[in-house]
Length: 504
Ligand SMILES: NC(=O)c1ccc[n+]([C@@H]2O[C@H](COP(=O)([O-])OP(=O)(O)OC[C@H]3O[C@@H](n4cnc5c(N)ncnc54)[C@H](OP(=O)(O)O)[C@@H]3O)[C@@H](O)[C@H]2O)c1
Image (cartoon, rainbow, N blue to C red; front, side, top):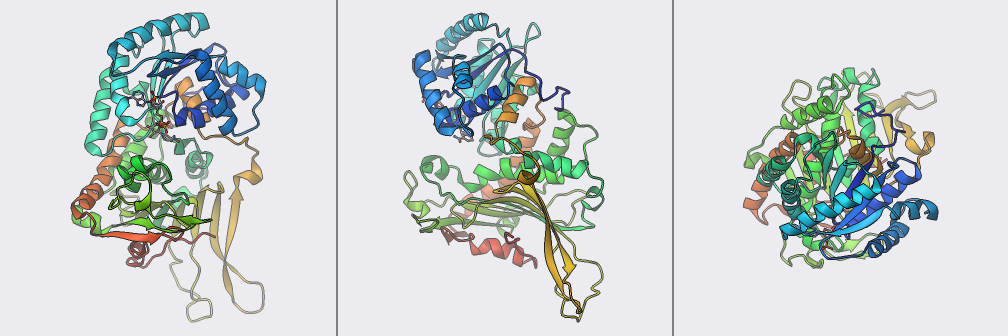
């Protein structure tokens, strides 16, 4: 069941799925393969059309051919030709360029004709798979020609890819621009992390099991670690990455999505408004740090040459990266949440590129037993109690605890109780976009970011952006590609008498 009461097996209403940026990588690599998976599962509307919008004229056949090639390359399962042909027969191409307003008037007419032919009624989903600079101009043109107006009972939705702004001011400006042409309920700010089963499962783990919630607070939890480590280097994305960096690219969106699900208060109801309000509330409770505090509570690094399954060139040698760039490819932060549940519980977040291991996890470290009963015995150093929510590479949940080693003497060892999704549930390999696209079509926005959440996220990271800008190269550390990241990240926890959890 979804949060708006639609059964997940139900087909969405007839609709047009209109993609701006149809010639781009995201459309070919993720959107079309996800629509294919939905088609294979019979979860697309019976009356449906996909309209690719291109800035230059392109024939229907040319775009179909290009999308088919993309599907063959990026499909997550063997392509059934019948399903693929049926899906691609729904595709048309219309030319429109937001810098030429008259092209949108033309496009609106062509779309109406196509929709009549395809019997998609008047429901429309506009997917902006374009560079962020085009989000507001496209929204403005769609608004101007009336394509976002919800009339005659039809819905009109606008899906916006990340990054949503580059700082607090730009995120506010983008929200304001979009809210001039659409209402909040029409906006679907997508973060593909929320398409992952384990991420959605954080809510279920916390709120469908009575045993966790009583200990989910500062009385029992020592601290929380959120790790998103990547082995991949920046590769061919130098131009985008050098202007962005690890903090902007990952923290206000992916890492804060994980943080908000782990730290939010229990919602009174499982509906989009209530759940999103709790998520926004906890993000707004992240303590705003002064610039001096932000410098003290962060580490940033940039990778130099090293080795990960072969030699890796240093970041500054990457194509389209400035040779003296001080963009961070690694960030570690210490944050505090100002509310009764989390007062005094640090949240340590880290993410980086070109690291030794690929790992995404949330590790909840519980406090030590209150009485050191085993003091002065060979076992007075107990291993640590962690509950680990693993998201990548293996999706699952692990509980680390101490147990007695069999034998006559008292010897204690740390052991793990492990649940892996793949051992219990057989899921078809997917792109992670299927649930999100389906939810857009059925109008369930529980997994999408609301304007207040986005702004609260930027509010929390803004002091770090400002402090680093002022500090320039000062404080930027270097780490070898294939290592565990900069020394400052280790020190951030060691200074508090803690350590990052090692992969088990
Ligand atoms: N690729 C991914 O895996 C991924 C993952 C998460 C988020 N995203 C986000 O998705 C968006 C698209 O990324 P991408 O990797 O697909 O980029 P891309 O390969 O460069 O494709 C960009 C697309 O946008 C179109 N476009 C460029 N400028 C435009 C403008 N001013 N107005 C209208 N259309 C314009 C391009 O059309 P032309 O052919 O006319 O130039 C092209 O189809 C970005 O916001 C990115 O941050 C991408």
